[in-house]
Image (cartoon, rainbow, N blue to C red; front, top):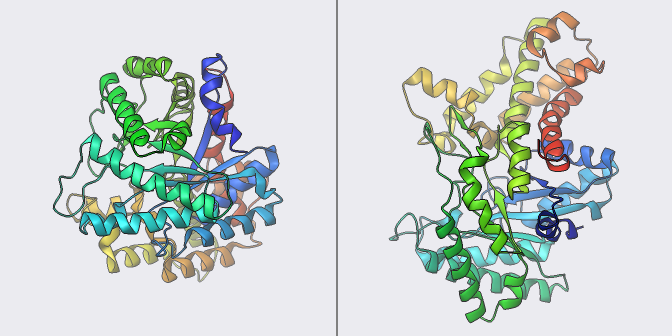
Length: 425
């Protein structure tokens, strides 16, 4: 199935570009929506776990790479998707979770994480050593980043050989957006300059060859650059094809490569289609999917408050507020302003830092309470129009809460699928 990934560059060169959605989430509803869409369409799904979500020490989800694959495979079995139609990717694999530690220690942990990812069966590996660790600048120079990427690639190659697995394909690059979006209001984002991208590619190629990793570099399918898209807490920077034209022209010099587009969340279908056509066929999306989930589950919380005696006044939203205030580490420092602004951002920010809290026991209990309260209940059409006016599941005649949540996420995935399959407009 990973032939789809290695076909991206040749297809673009042949004038028939297509793309693939990279679903970067560990949320069970998001994963089920993605798997269900692939099962219904007979397509291949690319699911990626990030270094913070999933690693050899558990990550914030508590899952190791093998546990994550087992979890998704279980969903695939339930949804009738052949496991062979899932490509697993590792995103931002490098020292990021341990960047507050000394470089040698952080890199040793990164090596152990990469080893665990590859042995578990992740076949698309994004190596990201762009961040400084303790005592280093926040952003490192290209040579240092490339040397650390080569160090991690060597571990990946050995792990695949030891596990008798096909060696992975790689994503490299140094101008890597912050995972999960920016933490401030953005007015503009400049695309990577062609000269900077060319230099990054050349430096990585040279260092990989010097390290005896020429074969691994031959399996590099994409570099991460900045196409000029990003989202902050309160706004989204839309893709403008003309601003990235000089950058994408560089791909004509690099026949084996395309670019991978991070932070495509909240872009329009037209913008996503342009990204694919221009040379960014790997469209990564994560917070935009859990944002859609949060919108729907909050809407159901309000519906239940109106519909069901004894349910209470938005108990789910209140439980999430209490949970985030009790453990502020995953939002504090990312959101700014007075108390009202902070409260609104905790729940409604495009950065969607609330996604870190859905797996907390109190949050899971509140969602389960909501699902139980609404199960089998008929939602009046007028009430649905108030809180879910454009909801596909309601329009299809269902009011089962889980179906509504999955349909909300699927509506986002549908736009990505159209952008990846249809020709540029």
